[in-house]
Length: 288
Image (cartoon, rainbow, N blue to C red):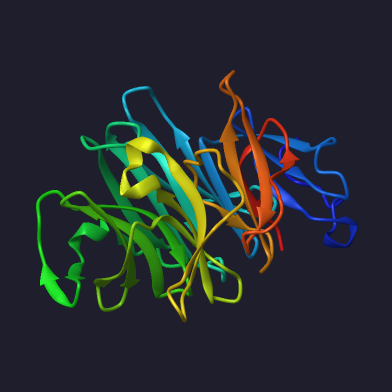
């Protein structure tokens, strides 16, 4: 199957784009554990928004990667060669902007010794920010520069404003970025892989346990008005960028002992218990 057909509709239940064994797939209906539409599009990370699909596709094992932009029928619109190992990927709510994170060195955010590159592109014009480390950094209200700065995990508020993680001097910060002004400003400590809620009021993220990523991460939600953090009811360590299913629940991937990922969900207010949403899948994205 080259593209998605129209058999899955929002009225039939929650429609999600996922990866199944590294292949772009779609699942929907009342039971997300059931059959899914599987395409021939291979990705290591994928995302979808407003009819635009982005795919990070490895080219060879020596870190060559392609960013492939597809329309809703999986027709290729743009291809950008990149260097690094695929890690995070997001599209703005309008479907106009795409952001990605690649590992240049290392393969884990636990501890030190890794290096990332995070870029942003206007899909319509092709205008590219190769690395947001080029932006002017304001940390704790003051201009900041350091050789050890890394950024990852962009989430878009709109086509200009975004949030991401910045790491430097052993701290991981939530930063707010402005593409046009080419600036990022720190907003909070110990916030990794942020995901902005559909109403723009909260950020779901992974928080290093006791501020130490070697001890694992706890899924949490930050209220942007009060800056209050609510730990969620998932006590297993989650190394993923959550996806909001609506304004009340988030989804995330968790790797099993056999190396296979499953997608789970749980309420965003700290209540409830984790629910297995889609077995044998990762990289969830809600299809509107």
